[in-house]
Image (cartoon, rainbow, N blue to C red):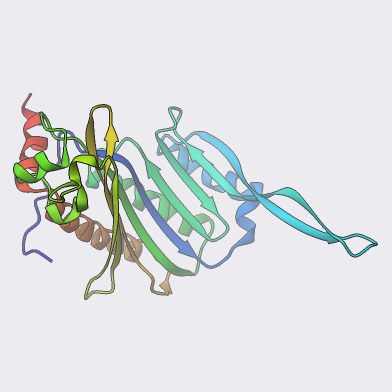
Length: 260
């Protein structure tokens, strides 16, 4: 990992959505109204006051008298959602996981504080015993100012050309409207990452999508402070990836927007 990461809050982050997730042992009681009641107050403190039950579709196969299988479906309770009134932030608690999702990212410090409150509420009300997986995902849609094609991003040194694929530098580049790629990464501290990247056509130009999903799959005791610290580490790796792919000149543009 780089010795120093630039943690300055971008004035105009290119984020579409940010998600943090913790998985734990199966707890079927999470579908019960009692769970929603227990979580209602701590979620309301986060301005997540809209509560709805989450369902999943189950396919049931039964045998008729002539031994011909017949499929039917039913909706089964799967957990609860706690949402802000504008739907920009959602906490979903399922039988084996909880997710914080926001489309209104106000910086890591704010997001981490909310995440800590969510995990603390889970520990005090539901009491999971074991963390089995932690994940942090940032989905970015990048459109630099005054440039509109992958070739321009490469020529102006805005994006690592290795992540532009054949959309830049190929004899076929002028004909390519969409190019998608995927990179899997493994870091020495046990963190893995899946990075989807691509160039997508939009109007008469192109946008760059960078989807960073960092995670660790280690079974350990569920404890609020440990989960928060592990998520901080995932954020460091996410930032490392972002600052490696999005070059400094483009990050300066994103910072410069804070100056008007």
